[in-house]
Image (cartoon, rainbow, N blue to C red; front, side, top):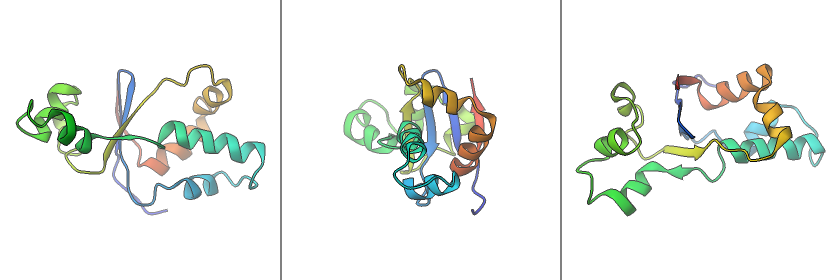
Length: 133
């Protein structure tokens, strides 16, 4: 896997990340070496969906709903989402996404997210954490 910049931040109830072209479900599932159509394959597939799948594109959201309210995308990131100023430049692109952190009552996903080995694999896949509050 090629080395990419640290691109994950957690703020309040959201995870912000840069989605690169290599962040596809098939590549994610390969990292865990699970058998196709097995329970673990489905579980790690749900983990991918929770973390990355159906993420909301920040730039598209800005263009569609907030471009009249904020004079620039950078200001939108800073003021609307409270992304720290030192990180705004990193997320000032069309591949910036966010997801809500709530997993509801998905106990197996909760357990996976708190497993250190899984956490490290996911972090490396996504580029690594740069900020967490």
